[in-house]
Amino acid sequence: MSTRRTVWIDLTNSPHVLFFRPILRRLDAAGVPSVVTARDFAQTLGLLELYRIPHTVIGRHGGAAVGGKVVGLARRSLALTRFGRSRRDIGQAVSHGSNDLAVAARLLRIHSTVLHDFEGATTMHRINFRLVDKVMVPEVIPWSALQALGLQERRYRPYPGIKEQVTLADFEPDPTVVDQLGLDPARPIAVLRPPATMSLYHRGIENTLFDDVLAHLRASDAQVVLLPRTPEQARTFAGADGVTIPATPVDGPSLVYAADLVVSAGGTMNREAALLGTPTWTTFAGELGAVDRMLIETGRMDILERPDQLVIAKRRIDAPGHEALADAVTREILAR
Image 1 (cartoon, rainbow, N blue to C red):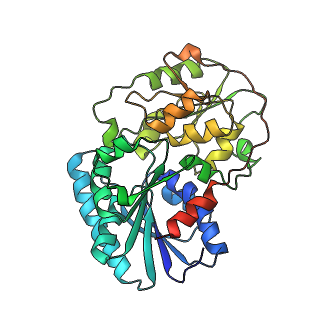
Image 2 (cartoon, rainbow, N blue to C red; image 1 turned 90 degrees about the vertical axis):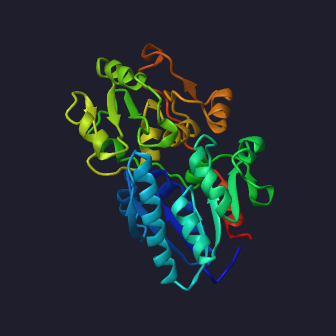
Image 3 (cartoon, rainbow, N blue to C red; image 1 turned 60 degrees about the vertical axis):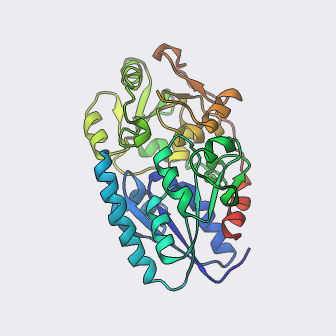
């Protein structure tokens, strides 16, 4: 696992920071130089600062409207292209779902790899499946679903396990996270994350269950930690009695590991919690992806239909295991 060429990693959303963190460690250990660019969106920049990962900020999210996304794609792709031209040492480009980097790498004629873990983001897939050299996805996602979106078999690289097993490769819980948020460790802790209302795969989906869950938990003895995805969501929930919104980014895996239940309408946080053994519920109102279906079928995650299904009580926390998938994923990223 060696190369002298720099690996360019582009981060466009908060979970990507945690996903690439163990990969960056492995690249460094193997003597492979890397460079990180990042989009100003959600907690991406804050997490990069938290984990002290050097990076260059390029562009921001285009918003929820389709027109804004198109303009944002064009602007950021061109900005990334300019950045790439300034770095003659770059040998390959890697992201988890960055259309911007897929376009820039094609224009620069740089070998590119994209990773995905949700077959429902169809618009994104139809773009980068056709532009990149290699597409890495969990093998649990049916090949037929990917082929229907334009993925050619020569680009297809399935890997065992799921993205969050890479994220948790070197996980050591931060015991101070509960104190950082001013929580009482003797009372139940519920961690919530609202729907990704700015994503195309949420367009047209009515999801009021999350609000019902929040009201139910606020009326209980639970301490609610709410992790908004956007500043707009933070303003919506700010000041709600019994709800803690972290003022600065916190170590998400450590928080869900310390929690007694986790409820999210999205995927990444739920999957981290499920792998760490925390009771986990999804309120996603659309069609669940193959990864989430697998976690539900294996009993690691549940579908929430009513707030009164939640068990609000302290739980026994077992020592976390360690995942080895990051080694294999890093090797495949470097392979041509």
